[in-house]
Image (tube, rainbow, N blue to C red):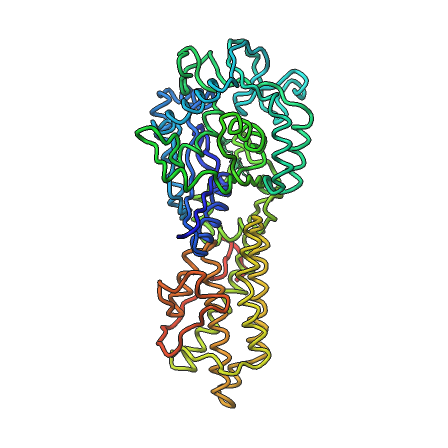
Length: 517
Ligand code: ME8
């Protein structure tokens, strides 16, 4: 039976339209989900929307509509984004769904029954933008450390005994050294927990847009307790309700990977494991916090008017080109800057010149010089053939290892090293010159190249599904032979079939108004 793999994105607040940051996180998960499917796993990929809390309530109020109508509309924008970006998620959760309400109430009941929740009074600062509580000493110039405005809040509140979980969390981190990536961020999490934890307010009594606390209708649950629970809701928990699913829960939980941005790592690496330990439920295997995108050097924000709309981006540059750029440009985990010059450079360099040219040159030569019949690989490859074939056969193991560490840009870098090797092999073997002098050898050279392109196309499907599919179509590879069971030395390109005249897959990108061409 295929091994299960359960991967999640954050659920996004529906206070606003999706932007490049949201698309980035979901894209990274999509690439991993597609990779794991091709590698034989039974993948469940979850995304969705976080619809409760004061931030969403305020956004609805400002638009003059009810929170439910508002969330229906904005949640749909995030669903549409999944189609526009060709995301392959298996489920889309909304926190306003009944399955989720049941899970949150069960989570609450367990925490309360096991003695981890008590009623008290909260007096302190609250940032609606961050949906987070702050003490006086945490404020920076009268604002939250993120720069968000804060309000003074004094109200009755339930508290979760987070302070009791300091040592169990530290022990858990010690026993699970891969729990958080990248390592530098894991160190920040550990120092935060070592600094001591205060009990956490987990209910609000001054507004209504949330999941009611069981047996106390004056309170709604704190939006982060509600939101984090989404990951286990979608696994089929709680299993003893009408909407639960024991078999699914057993298969999916604990999740393999929660992918998040660095802004919300503390919620995922401290609060969430503490809630789960307290509720006596298994903890997720890994949380990875990626970095932050800026736009031409500036923080992306609505007030600066520089929010990047992913739909506009893919319309301008192309879907797979945008997907490739986002995954290749920045070491995953670091902050990155979006610029028109950087994406154009990647498109014209890596895609048009390197991979695009390789495919176009090789397939055109097969068309012209071999009457479009796919040539056969040499029975006795010479050293240069073997060098290239060994390099491409070795990619799967390297890429798998890098993606298990979420090193997307490195994975693409090692694939493109083989693209460069292949281009050098074209130049040094000069198949066009062999046409007259040694047509047998010419056919062998073209077959080695076609085999290299086949494996590269199969390996790049997770990042560029449509373009890789076009390359495989042009090579005449059947749909049934496009997963990882037929690469890395375990299968070779078929020969003797007819291929059509290739059309360029990655044309050069010319900036509007530019004279470059
Ligand atoms: O925090 N660069 O939702 P949210 C990179 N509902 N990634 C970015 C980004 C940027 N400039 N801007 C946003 C929430 N992101 C909660 C999550 S989970 C149980 C609840 C991405 O709509 C990044 O993944 O504010 C970040 O963590 C997430 O969007 C925040 O989305």
